[in-house]
Image 1 (cartoon, rainbow, N blue to C red):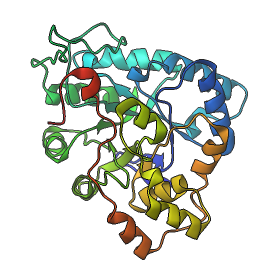
Image 2 (cartoon, helix red, strand yellow; image 1 turned 180 degrees about the vertical axis):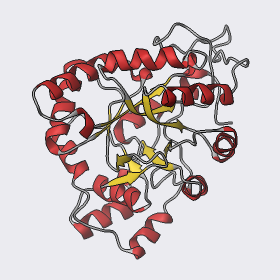
Image 3 (cartoon, rainbow, N blue to C red; image 1 turned 30 degrees about the vertical axis):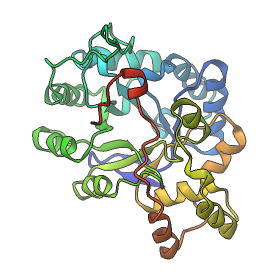
Length: 309
């Protein structure tokens, strides 16, 4: 299944996120995912593994496992490169060993102190607070993103972690509308207002952290996971599926793309097997009652400032 973007290109509705993946694990993960049918990979300069992803992609292309045109590859502009969009994009393309990106996103709606293209550092001041660059507007950044499309380096451009107001602003000043807004959303953080606003205005929503971060975010941020919710566990038993499959199916039936992350082949396979069943309207409505407005991915822990404040 795929969603047609406002740019005219199709994006597979299920993708694989590669955050916190390192070394040989990335090669095996990507090769296995392609063999299982994944055609959408979600990367970012800040994940600091584009080189390893690129090596795996090169292997996949050279061995005939998949053709470049059959893959949808996303990566993201880091905060410290808002004033160097073209250079940052070219750096990502070089590391990924690609001629073009299917989708390039502004990772966060904040420009920070430049530390060198592709270094993706988050410089803190003496008080341990993120050094935000107030001289570069999001509008300036966006127009530089638009130039990438004109140059043929990127097919579609989008935003990430933008709320309603910032998304509205981007729609107002853009010549090329954002094709995607990638946000955290899952049963404990449903964000219906934002999802519906984006969809109303032709912006596809991609759910990062679609499973609520599970164990990884519990360990990193101290958050709780929706995968332990008794109602979702009951639904898993009802449909003879895993809780993760129920949650991913819920995301798909909201018309959002989902990009779960896992390093385990069994879960990689399970996360892709979400097209052979459908949740009833009653069960979709039941899951809607679970919303706790709980953000599990909170960079304030590292930045000393809540950029969502």
